[in-house]
Amino acid sequence: MKEKKTYIDLFAGCGGLSLGLFNSGHWKGEFAVEKSPDAFKTLEYNLIIRNNHFEWPNWLPQSNHDINELIRKYPNELRQLRGKIDMVAGGPPCQGFSTAGRREENDSRNKLIKSYIKFVRLVQPKIIFFENVKGFTQKFSRNKIKGKVYSEYVQNALNRGSKSLDALGYNVFGDLVDFSKFGVPQKRTRFILVGIRKDITKGIDPKNFFDKVNNDKTKFLANKGIGITISLEDAISDLLRIEETESSDTKSFKTGLYCEPKSNYQKLLKGDVKGNIPNSHRFAQHRPKTIKKFQYILKFAEKNKPLSNKLKQKFNLKKRTLIPLSANLPTPTITTLPDDYIHYCEPRIFTVREYARIQSFNDWYEFKGKYTTGGKLRKHEVPRYSQIGNAIPPLFGEQAALTLNDILNG
Image 1 (cartoon, rainbow, N blue to C red):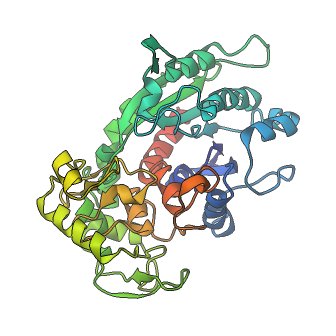
Image 2 (cartoon, rainbow, N blue to C red):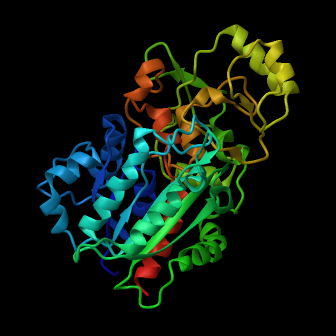
C-alpha cells in the first residue's frame, strides 16, 4: 500500500472531517487545530488516543489551540512543514455567514478567513479542502448596500498568492454540495472549495474534484451497502424509546438500548460496536405538557416544515423554529439546537446519538463534554449537540478523501 497522505485539520471541531479521512484509509493527520476544549476532547479521544490517527509534532502541545495564537507562536515551525504536508483541510466557524442565524457581516468569526489564508501561505500544502455554509457564497446586505461575498474573497486571495516570493498561488474552484445526495440522511448544502498549488497542478483542474466525487458516489455507496438517498427512518429506527436503562454519564436520566438494525445504513454505522447501550443516547426529560404538545404536532402538522402560525398561536410558541420530521425523507439541515426538531414518531427531541447518526458518525465515535447548554454559556461552551451540528458529515468526508487522494496521485 502507498504511503498515506498527510494533512492538517483547521477548525477541526469534534473531528467529522478527520473521521472521514481516517475511514478512507489513505490519510494521516499531522495535527488538528480546534479552539474549543470540549470539541477537542472528543477528537482527541477518538482519533488520537484510540486510533493514533495524528502524528502530532513535538513542538506543539497536544491540546486545543486558537489559530491566531498558533500562527503568532510558531511561524517558523509552520514554515518548516513546507514540502511535508499534502493538504490543509477545514473551514472557519460558520455562524457569522449562516442564513439560519443572524448573519452578521461584522461577526468577529468572519475575520478567521484571513487567519486561514495566512496559515495556508505559511505551510503551502499541495492541496486545499475548504468547507463553509451556503451563506458563504451570498452577499451581506446592509442598508441596501451590498457587502462582501466571502467565497470570492477566498478564491481571489488563494489564486493570486501574495507579493512575497515564498507564497505560491493556487488554482481554485468552489461549488455548493448537497450532502443528502451522497448517502447522508440530511439535506445539508455546503460550500466546498478545492485548491491545487499552481506549481504541481500539471493540467489538473480543481473542478475535477466535483466531477469525480459525483461520478464515484454510486459505486462508493454501493460498496458500503447503502443507496444515495437515506431517510430519517433508515438512519435511526433502531434507536427508538422501546427499552431503556439508567444513563451511565448523567444521574436521573434514562438512556435507550439498541433495537435490531432495520437498514443497511444502521448496520454500517453500528459496525461491530459491542454491548446494547449506544453512546450518548440519553433522552430529554420533557414535561407531560410538552409531550402532549409534541403528540398533537406530530399528528396534525406538516412534516419537515416549520410550524404554521396557526399551530404556533395554539400553543403560544415564540420559538422561531420547531420542525416535526418525516420518517420517509432526509431531515432538513440539523442545527446546534436539538429542540428545533421533533422526532418523526416519538414525542421528543433527538438524542445526541441520533444527531450523530443523521450526520453519519460511526457509533463507536464517543462524544465528550456536556450534552447541551444555553444562555450566555453558549458563547463559551461547545456541548455534544453543538459539536455534531457544526461538523462535516464523515461519510461525505470519506468520499472527499478518496477523491482528493486520487487527484494527488494524478
